[in-house]
Length: 300
Image 1 (tube, helix red, strand yellow):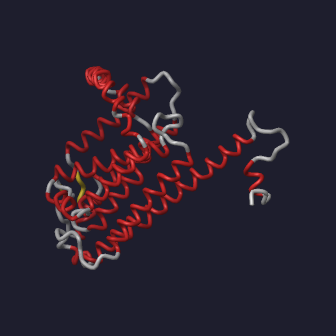
Image 2 (image 1 turned 30 degrees about the vertical axis):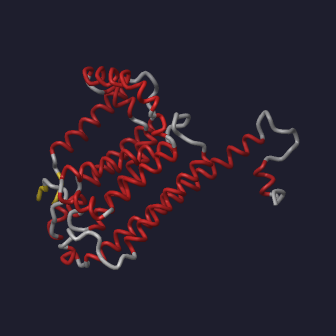
């Protein structure tokens, strides 16, 4: 088996399926996270939430695919493979973590010393965190996500991440962190402090989708490659420009599918909430609900 120590090191096609990233720090963190989560679930007083367990487990599996599998090695040779990584982190891992909300379980399963230090730190920064509550606002979450995505796809930062392992790690961490903050606003835990109403969530998803479409269109229809470090694309049967165009399409189509799916789900929830409100205690007896009115054409 070919073991790669640096995620951005170019790999030949015939070596791709044997190139696994066995960085001990990365693997250690993933194993420690799984251990802490399992321990936290067993120590919890509430009944096990199987759905959240599956969501968190799915996020870890996708992280393994994105960062440990041969995809990590191929990402150093092809911009399109690198874009697959980004799509997995931004559109799969981040929303799964936002839905799973594992922080309390992980804290409960952490070693006592770490748990006490974390609780003490939370108490110490609580006054500051209250003043920074705006961080979870929809507009701020969207802007932070936009700046991170566009910044790391600019030629300067993208090339720097390919050349530096530390920046490469920072790139992936910032994708996940800002992605979780954004998705927590849209699909976070029901009743959570940062989750917005479904109607506003539709607007946030639409705005996020539009900036993604614009960036992917720039990549797809560019006349010259943005990232000169990809010098071995020919052995994969692609020119550097064709590889970049493929990367743009990978960002464009899967991203659009995810955003449209989430937006439609939120829209249905919004309409159902309106219908429930109309049929609730404050509704007028005998008056049809809003959805029923729309279905019968009475809303025209």
